[in-house]
Length: 280
Image 1: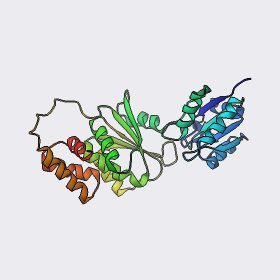
Image 2 (image 1 turned 90 degrees about the horizontal axis):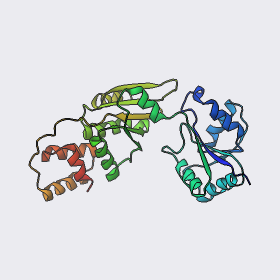
Image 3 (image 1 turned 45 degrees about the vertical axis):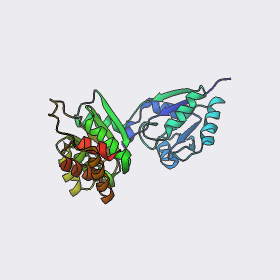
Image 4 (image 1 turned 135 degrees about the vertical axis):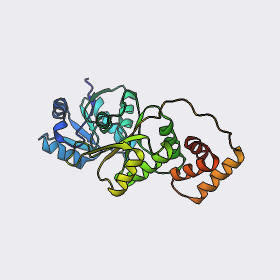
């Protein structure tokens, strides 16, 4: 018996003209489309006049939902999985579906297309021969602190997503972790009517977006740590005193970036070492 194929199908991130001919051909041949948001997907199918069965598969779907869909593939149906926009399984729940398909020995075929990560990298002019993608950073806590520290130390360009109402806070934390003069860019509403690509230093971007709160989908790109001669080592602060001060500052509350900055100033250490103390 012929098994079907799971197609991981990229869809436009804004401009509908970015849909590939191959993507449309796949939509026209599959038996069912699994979608993160069925309403958005039905609108997309309606625009291209492709009547297809649409089923829901999202971050809160049960294991049984994945198995049921893959049972159809095993029985011979071709299935397309699409996310809200862009390339599935990149910072969305499609990864679990794809992993399970491989575990069951089913065929998985990618249909490449739009991606906010790649579109932003192509447009901002920061080095992209190597880059780190972090998706959405945690909103607070040690996990966020650790990733901000990683961005500060990384020699390669870093890309992350952020909600518009939290973009300025992220930029402020990046300024504290990386330094206000680190090159960066904000790519907003890519391929859409109100597309905006703004490049500058992290500090300049903080000032701009404090005055002009962003709207829509936001992708933040941060240049890598500058490569130069290592600075002369400073005398290390007493470990116990440093931890005690870090705990006291955490207890007072405040943004991780601001706490790290104050800790670095008081102890005469780098922001990176301050973040390391805070994450312990």
